[in-house]
Length: 129
Image (cartoon, helix red, strand yellow):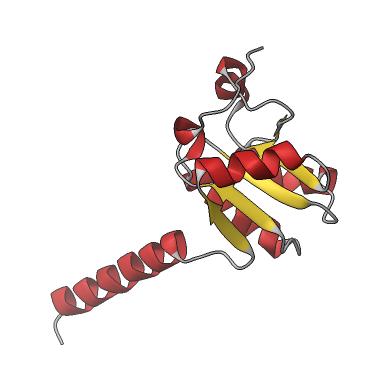
């Protein structure tokens, strides 16, 4: 094999690994529609609602009762979240909440759901700071 062939194989392997790890389902994470998510949020008991967007995004509008723990800080702040509750996650479009679920899964969380499509799909009340 020549050098270019080896380089292409490596590039293909890295790209495949990236796509698989990025889009692979997270164990214990349920994808909820906006309506299903609203129903879970309204039940209030036994759930913790976490907005994983950055503080400047959160201030522009968030779901009432949500706690802001940005994805960039989640690994350091995971102890603030009770594993006894169902963890409801959301972000702007749904990608960061999936990444947050991966982090929480590595810390033993198994009862999680996220808002499919993020806050952009949310039809309920929004608070601003």
